[in-house]
Amino acid sequence: MDDDRVWSFEKSLWTGDADHYRELVDDECLMVLPTPPFVLSGTQAIEAVAATPRWSNIEISKGQIARPQEGLIIVAYNAKASRDDESYEANCTSTYRRIAHEVWRVVQHQQTPPLAIPAVDG
Image 1 (tube, rainbow, N blue to C red):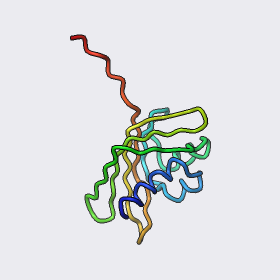
Image 2 (cartoon, rainbow, N blue to C red; image 1 turned 60 degrees about the vertical axis):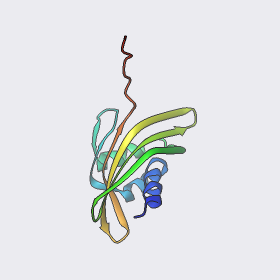
Image 3 (cartoon, helix red, strand yellow; image 1 turned 90 degrees about the vertical axis):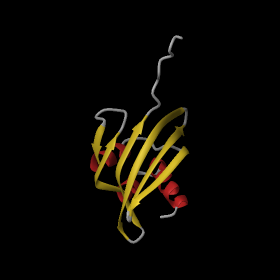
């Protein structure tokens, strides 16, 4: 999968509906999100997406792609998502594995909102 397709794939996970998520997220996927229950299986993540309004806009920056072996892609990036009057930002990673020619599934995803670091008196 070339870089443009990787980023298109990743963006679609933020904006696509539950059926799209079911198609792209592996049942064995593990996700870590910043809200309870924090750690979800692929099935739990799909159920959560089905009950959550999708993001209407997603901006990805600081993106990096690694391909440590054939059939495995890892992405890391900063996401800024919005819908209506709501916005969200997180640093994210996703891992995809190829299960057939041009067929990829997400097997790992995590989101970490920016951490507030207290100012140091100096």
